[in-house]
Structure formats: structure tokens, C-alpha cells
Amino acid sequence: MDQPDLTPLDDVRARMARAAAIAGRKPEDVDLIAISKTYPPESILPLIEQGQRVFGENRVQEAQGKWPALIAAHPDVKLHLVGQLQSNKAEDAVALFDCIHSLDRPSLVAALGKAMAKAGKPVPCFVQVNIGAEEQKGGCPIADVPALLASAREAGIPVIGLMCVPPAGIEAAPFFALLAKIAAENGLDRLSMGMSGDFETAVMLGATHVRVGSALFGARD
Image (cartoon, rainbow, N blue to C red):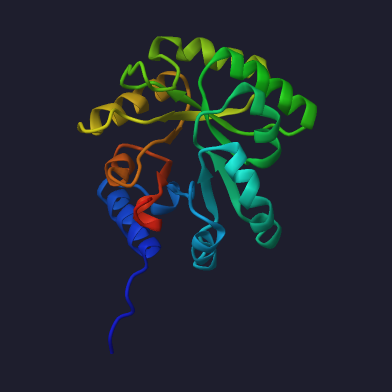
């Protein structure tokens, strides 16, 4: 009897499990965030039907357009914001998202702290670190991480870990290892790192959240 074809979701989960086993970790210790930015609800629904429950979006406005109806139909789905967040969108982000991965500067700490207090909703956050010191990228400079963490905690923001996007086109492993080191030095044990091209490496180096888009949904236009 022929084996049924693996779905992209099955394939990604199997690869995550293999990477976890190599590192002596349990597969359930790593959350898969399906990055659904630019994909319409009809592309997202099949993953929900296959049991995927955590999704990531890059932009507040795009998420507002498609997720309220999906969440109303599937209230156990969790939505993470993984893209840059403008301070003037802080209230909207706090209202819609269950986790924010891009806390990266003092002005955003102030805006999110105020928005969470107003809504009575403390949203878990990752501090995004500019791990490759790239001028064109968002993220807190490595040297400023302790101060940003302290100000976020003072503002009542629950910071749960660190996030990074390594420089494109070079080996990601050293950057993932550096992020893990910075997190450990600051008493944090969650790491949002790894995307479609390098999530297995990230899992082997301690990722607790991987952000996978094209390997699940196919290439973007």
C-alpha cells in the first residue's frame, strides 16, 4: 500500500524533530511559527486544518485584514508579530497579537508598555537583536541589550527571550550561537531564530521558536 505524500507541514515537522534528536532535545520543546505574511486566508486554512496553531505576520495592517475572521472560527490559533513594529501601531499590535518578536528600541518599549497597561493585556515579547550589526536592519545593538531588557521590565513588558535575523548569504550558525550566549548571560531561555533555509541549524543550536514561511506555503510572488 502506497504511503500518503507528506505535506509541507509534515516535512518541516519531521526535519525539526530530526534536528532536535541530533541535539538531544525533545521536538515538543520547539514551536513552529508558520509565517503567513502575504498569503491569503485560503492558503492558511489548509495548515489550520492539518493542526498548525501558531502563525506569524510581519505587518499589523495586513494581519488586521485577514486574521480576526480566522481566529473567530479557530479560537485556539495564536498569532505572533515577527516584523518591525512602528510605535504608533503599538495599541493595535497589543489588541491582535499573542506574542511580539520585534521589541528593539526604547521608544517602542514606552509605546508597548503604555498600550499593554491600557488594555490590561501583558503580551509576551522577544527583544530583537541586530546580531550581525547591519545598519539596514532593525534590532537592538548587542551592547544595548541589558539596558533595553531592564527598561522593558520596568515598563511591565513580559520579555521572554531574544530574536534575531542573521545576515543573508553567510553561515547562520555562529550568529545563532551568539544569540544563545547573549540570552544565557541575561537569564533568558527562549530563542526565536531560524527560517525556511536554516531552521534545522537553529534547532540544533537551541531555538525554541522557528519562523518558517516558504517551506510551508511555497515561494512568495
